[in-house]
Image (cartoon, rainbow, N blue to C red; front, top):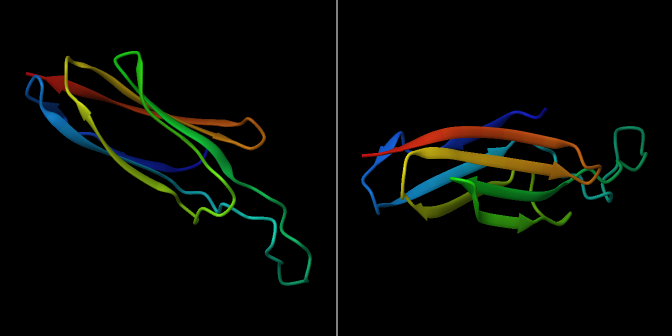
Length: 106
């Protein structure tokens, strides 16, 4: 699993729009770079990111090789009830990295 950083408010008022941040530490190799010996570094990208809140998908992105290393996503969601906010990153080989946090609605 890759290291990731997520930020979800610990609590929010019902109906409040909150900011969510998610970043994964990943080189996002394009397949055009070479190493110190001149060999091509193979493509190595996160191909998909999605966020699920209270069992419903609230954000999804398909990623391409042109994206920079350590992609950061910032988006908003409406706090409706206390529930987990789940993050999923899938690389081009199908390997999955996940994280989650609970958003408490008061």
